[in-house]
Amino acid sequence: MIDWQAIETVLFDMDGTLLDLHYDNYFWLEHLPKFYASHKGWSETKTKDWLMAQFKTKYHSLDFYCIDHWEALLGIDIITLKKEINHMIDFLPYAQSLLKQLTALPVKTAIVTNAHRRTLAIKDQVVQITDYVDEDFCSHDFQLPKEDPGFWSALSRTYSFNPATTVLVDDNERVLASAAAFGIQQLVMPLKPDSMRPLQKMRQPDEFIGIHCLSELLPNKTLSIR
Ligand SMILES: [Mg+2]
Image (spheres, protein in one colour):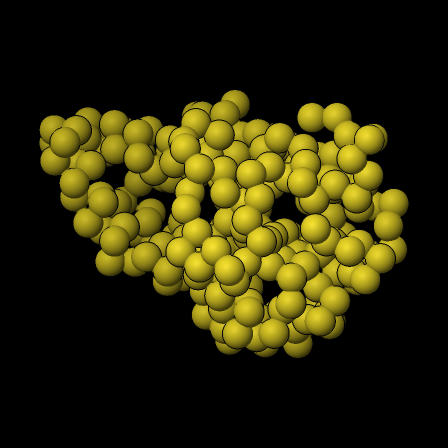
């Protein structure tokens, strides 16, 4: 699937690609609404509808991923609330195997995430994810979400990589499209970002490489453990 001999750089999204998106979905769609309903004295249904309307206005923008934005809007401490369920933070199957196997190859690895630095810090405390890669970048560092093709130009000015010999693995199809517009050649989309939900569908199945599990990317499949 990937000719690892021909690859110099591997860029990984974090949530839904290396880490189970179930934590994030549960937090934003269940844990936060429950807390906010009691905080405001609203019903859970009203709270969920109101929150969903707020999320929708920010889809694909940096604010959507920005903890500071949501703390200011809601007037609550989101980080403390997130930590209440940090036992749910976990790798997706074969993520650790893949990351470990890549350290044996002459490739550079980096996490490139839309997550806020404070969210990355919570996850890093629990699963030490940054120990598995050479570098980590948050789109807030560049003031552009990954969905914006300008993000990849900005990243490449800070972090040198050749788009022709780079693999990007990201569960967000819009992000893959913006990376394609920049020129990244090998674009892989995990189709099961949330272990508790069914497979997600690709809108453009001819454009990107869809995978059901990270085990499909392992350079050495015989050595793998889940
Ligand atoms: Mg993701």
